[in-house]
Every structure is written in structure tokens, then in C-alpha cells.
Image (cartoon, rainbow, N blue to C red; front, side, top):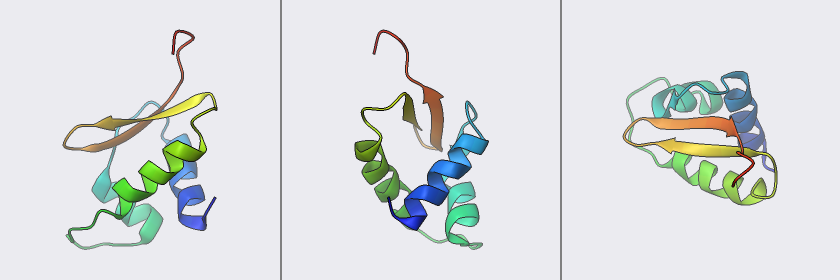
Length: 76
């Protein structure tokens, strides 16, 4: 796991079950405090999902906003 992936996962864990915006992630994980257009959060979440795919947590996309971490349902 890269440092950015670890920091993103740690931030999502701290905010579990709450939708976190892409801008908030860019600010807290990468330190981007300006309104810039980047796919850094999306690309990092994509790589992180692959790495945690067998675990008990899921990173959901919140369309048009950001991401939310939750525990996997028993039926998944």
C-alpha cells in the first residue's frame, strides 16, 4: 500500500459511514487547498479497492460527491 493509499484509507476509517467529498480528501490526504481538477482521489480509490477487495470493508462511491467507507454486508 502506498503512503497516499494508507492516508486515504485512514481518513475514511476516521469518517466511517459518512460521505467524504473529493475536495475534502484532496485537502486532507494530498494537502491541495485550492479548487483544482484532478482525478487523484478517484484513481487512488480505484487502486485501494482492488487491494482491500477480500476484506470486510467497502469503499462506496457517492455519485457526484465523493466516497464512503462501510462494512461489507453478510450477503455480499
